[in-house]
Image (cartoon, rainbow, N blue to C red; front, side, top):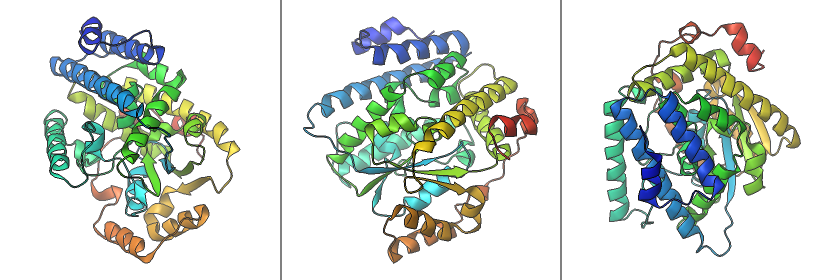
Length: 364
């Protein structure tokens, strides 16, 4: 059992703040009542919640000292999980005009440290230790989603500061919490997101922010409230490829923390969550011009990634120089495509069929 009262007392939480109390109560109750956490899982969940809330508190303190926060234009890579977002994101991150939050920055952000200094190297080492234990409890996860301390990582690691992140569903069976994520006011998460980027900018302000998280799908309105000049690149891939892959990743993560895993339940809740997110996104994207919201195909990314990069830059009127093209080409030549590792999974493993997946995710 994760003791809510003890966490509140230890961290001196102010639960009169509904932007804190709402996600906190829903998450902890769902973990306690539904998750079937192992002993290790309970320790890990409690540790993560406390760390995320500590960082939230530090973010609020630091943000108060920023006189006029104004975040550089962000570019959001969106799409269903496992749809090629990581490859696209990593290609775009080869551009020095793009700044991406790094894994260590989201794990150990405070106090801020000098770029390339000794203390930054220490933070990277501390984050390496986190990844070492991650590999112990979730072996072979790197085959599905490789992480390095000094590499760009998804915004779901920023949203955790608001306790509104699908990370917790990947970690444990939390259906009530997942329903909450589908229907809650996600501006709570984007408020923390904006504050965090504002703080990072006090040390290094980029030309543009490059950001990625599949759960940005269906949250375009909330994003615009904080980032009115945002641009979106939405990658489309057949969900017959993406849905079983994200189910497989979810099952792999849960093995490290749960006493029992129900694959069919993972399948049902995964498809229903992304169906709702996709429907919201289809409605919200109608307000954008093609210069603000660009849809690209996974096949084009894999078949001719450099040509796709040229199309993206031309569409958004971004400058693409030869140095960046060379860096992108070098990244591709290192063999970073998603088919580097083959994974065995099927829709049937998760109680799903092809017609259901295509119908629910409006793919033809």
